[in-house]
Each structure stands twice: as C-alpha cells, then as structure tokens.
Length: 130
Image (tube, rainbow, N blue to C red; front, side):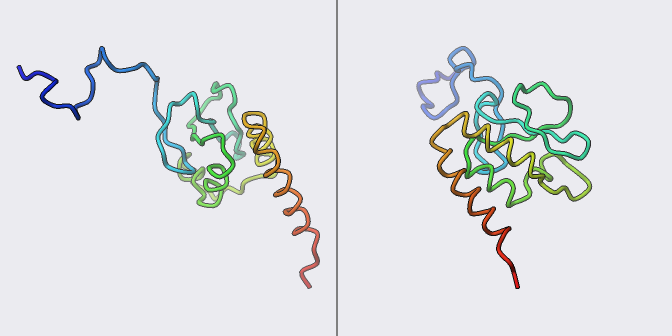
C-alpha cells in the first residue's frame, strides 16, 4: 500500500476530513458552499418562497445570503432552471422584498445598498416614459 505522504495533493482520508455537512452550489455565483451557509428557495403553487427554516417540501435551489448573488440569480433566471420549472416564472415583488429583508437581517451592511436601490427602483417606476 502507498503512503499518503507520497501524494500531498490527495484528498484527506475520511477520518481526517472535517465534517462540514452537505455542499450546495449557489445559483447566483456558482460557487460551492455548505448548505447551512446558503439560503434555500422553493417553488410553492407557482410562487418562489424563501425557505428560512430549510423545512419546506419540494426541490430547492440555494443562493448565498448576499445581494450580488441574489441579483445575479434573478438576472440569469437561475431559480427557474435550478427548480426545473416548466413554465416561465416571474419573480414576484413579495419574494424579492422578503429575500432582501432577510439579507439585511443576515448582514446589516447590505441595508444601505437595499434602501438606495429600492428608492431608485421606485423612482424609475414613477417616471413617465413619454
């Protein structure tokens, strides 16, 4: 049998590996991370719902609790692909609001970005296009 010292790049033996739990891929940035550090999102009745307790039934997708990951996932329509939805799903305002509120709870520094972006979105929707 070959000693592990001969292969320093080899994966650690099962007894040496740290117990990080299951790994998931963020649908926003496509980086792998532990499931406990990601926000799970499910589709219930055609509506996207953040699964804060990770207990809701059905296929889930995962996203880092960071603004840029969430925005990238929405822009790329990654939730639709990850959840394997057959019909085109529009991201509802309630879903977006609840996820952004959660992001602020997790990292209060994102509050400034969320507030300024929300105000800009409202101004853009109020402006007359004609």
